[in-house]
Structure formats: C-alpha cells, structure tokens
Image 1: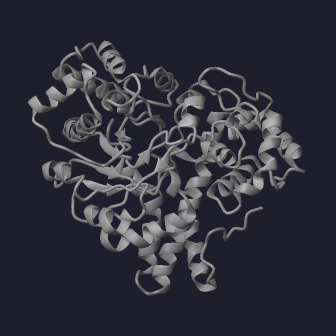
Image 2: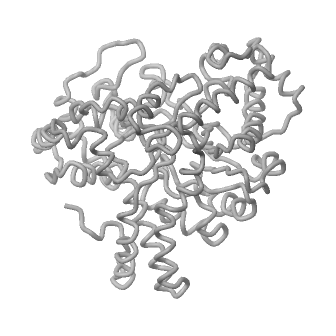
Image 3: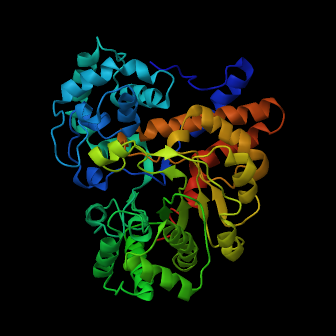
Length: 473
C-alpha cells in the first residue's frame, strides 16, 4: 500500500505542515479542464473491457517504453493502420507487460499505475512476472462489478467537471447523449473542447478534405476565407451549446501573426490549391491563433495553446500504427517573440484568457512566468505530457512562482486518455503543491492560513475560475 506521506517532503517538520495542507486539498472536487477521455465511455456507460485493453493498449506512455526495448506495439494489442494482425488475448498482453515492469522503475507511469491499482481497484498485490495472472484476475473481477462502470467511478472519483476534446468535424453525438441524460451541456459534468487543428494546419493529413467537410457541417462555403471563418464560428457556437468553455490548439510552435484579411485570404487560397509550403502553413497557423483570440473575445471561449511537440517523429511507428501512439517528441519552443503579435493585439484585455503550456521546461522562468506576470490575458498551464511528473511539478512551482505568483497559473490538467488514472494524477499534483507551500511556511515566507487558502485554490477554485466552469451557461 502507498504510504500516506507519498511525495511529501522528507524533512519531518516540513512534512507535518504538508500533511495538514494536503488534508485540505485531497477532498476537493476534481476539475479536469483538459483531457482526451473518449466521451463514449461515459455516454454509453458500458463495463470496461479486460484489464489489458483498459490500462495498457491505449496508453502510449506504456507502449512506447516497451518499444524502446524492442517490443513492437502490435504485441501489446495496438491497432495497425493496415489492419494487419495484432495480439488480441488480453492475458497474453498483460503477461508480456508484466515481464517488462522493471522498465518503469522511477517513472511517473509506474506511480500512476500502482496508485490506480490500489486506490481505484483496491488491488494491492505488487505487479511482477510471477504475480501477473493474480493481478489480472483481481482487476478483471472488479471490472465485472457494477460499481466499476464508468459513471459510478466518475461519481466516486469526485469529478465535478470533465472536459473532453473534439474536432470541429465531430457531430458531438456522444455529448448530446450525455446532455439528454443530464450529464452534459452548459454547466454539465462532461463538456467538450473545440480542437480545430485538423482544419487549421495545412500540413495535417487531409486538410483540404477536412475544410470541405467543415463547410458541409456548418452550412458555409469554405471555398472562400470569409466562409471558412464563418464555418469556424458556427462550429464554436455548436460546441458552446454542448458545454464547451475552451478551445485548444496543438501547434508545432507558439508563433502568432497578425495578417490583414487580404493576406490571410491569399494564404488560405494557396492552401486550397495545394500550393502552400511549410512556411505558408506555419504563417497560416500563426495567423489563426490571433483570429481565434478575436473569436474568443466575442464568444468567451478560453484559448489553450499546446505547442512544442515534434509530431510523428518515429516515422515507422506512425506508418505502422498511426497518430497518437507514442511517436511524438518534445522540442525547444520560443514564446517571447512568438506570442508578441497576439499579446500586442489583445494581451492586456482581461476579457481574454489564454492558457499557454510548454514541453520545454527551460522556458518556465526565462519566458513564460514573466509573460504571465505581465499580461492580463495570459495564464500558465500546468506541466503536461512529458513534463507531467512529480519532479517537474516541483520545479514548475519553484521556477514560476517568484515571477508569476500562484494566481497567474491555471491549476492542474491531467491531459489523459486513461479515465481511471484521473484521480491519481490530480492527487499527485495536490501532494506536490502541499509540499511546496509547506516549505514556504517553514521558511517564514508565507503564513499558514494563506498556504491553507492557496492549496485549495490551486486544487479547485483556480481551474474552475480560469476555465469558466459555471460561467458559460
């Protein structure tokens, strides 16, 4: 069983303070403002599949580690692009994973998974090659029980709001089902997020086809730039009606660019003709971030920017298994000059909320904290993806607090497809924040009552406020 002092400071005096602060944060409802849980899981509320298909097959944190040691994803059940055979026996997948469990020593993946076993499923048998079948059987038995169906777990996890992420081409049917059941819509417990990358990024596979489909769904002529913008506004309105409070943009860089309407229209036409090069695609993405900021001033959506991933870096993995299966790699990302056009235009307008994330932690103190500490519209998103770990969460607070404070940050985001890991990930963040605040109290830099208020703000009140949950209805 995990110790109650997991991740709390080692110093006994500071640890005692951290325990008290963590006790305030731990019971707070979970606000999950950014993630990739499939809304069908909750809309349909079917029993989860076997443990391997629930916990291993869709988790690229796990499958990429085994790939690094020569185990092909197909042997772990990851679907192939061409439909070629993959392992379908859940127990076989589980045994293979358990045989490589030692690879995860010291990683956040191991921490999350062990805590999921114990805290979510009550399985305390330590995973090893020798215990693989026993752990599998215990988990399978839990998954057969009604209290481990998705909606029952949602309630037990204490989730107040869960935001999923959908494309403008999604019909939002799952969210309509959730709304009909009293779970979705404005002010609902499960809301969507507007993610337009596949109709904005000219380098996205099928961009022109996607743009045409966007026009069909929205009832606008996307053969023109004006019609394209109208279609995007129409889809944003549909997403807001489905409960969305934010948009999300996963661009390669943080570059923004304020083009004239004529310049943007010329770039757009070039893309439709199939003549746009990489520089054109980057310029159009950059311009559209400024355009989306203007739309946010009109419709109120919070604008999230997730830059810095070199997508599909592992070309074999992409060709064999497709997108989002662990083939992406972080890269250096510049913000000061990149964000200047957007901030020049709208950075001092408190009606706009822009939450910026990074995969380049060296920018925490050098660029992002000073920017967030100097513009009314800008907030710092939590460390995500490759940086979503106890060590980086600590370094984040140490790096940004002196320039940005606590209240120019946006709270924790779990950014996960793994529904059952959500409470574990939020708990880790709450423990790290309790430890950081306890150190400030122990060093006489913060009063204990202020630390008590702040730890609850970081866990609950701040993300709820920044992402406008409860406001958009």
